[in-house]
Image 1 (tube, rainbow, N blue to C red):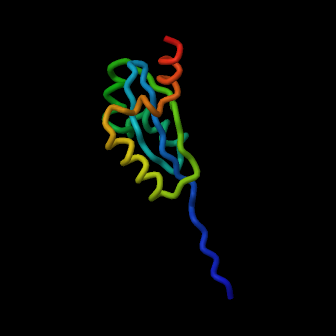
Image 2 (cartoon, rainbow, N blue to C red):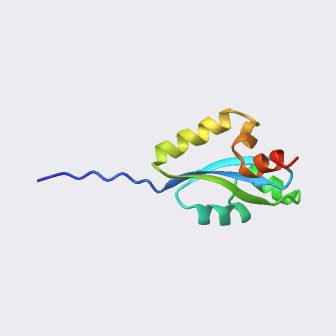
Amino acid sequence: MDIVMTVDKSFCTYLLHFTDQTHYVGMTGNLPRRMRQHHGSQGARYVKRKLTQGYDFVVAQTWDNMTRSEAMKLEYKLKKRGRWHYRYCPICIEETINE
C-alpha cells in the first residue's frame, strides 16, 4: 500500500496598493473572500482605517501556489522590511519609470 501525501498549495501572499501610495501585506487561502472582508467589517485595522480616511486599494501583487507555512513566512519577511513594500509593487515601479 502506497501512502500518498498531498500538499495544500492554495495559499497566497498579497500586496495591496492604496491610493495614498501606502501598502498592506497579507496572506490568505481565499483571496476573493479576503478582499470582501477587507471591504467589509472583518478586515485588518490598517485597511479599515485607510478606507475610512477615503483611500481605496487594489491588489497590486500576489504570490500564489504556496503552502500556508510558505505564505506566512513570505508575509512575515515582507512586513519585516518595513516601508519598503513599494519595491514589490508593480504600480509604484511603473510610476517611478514614467517620472
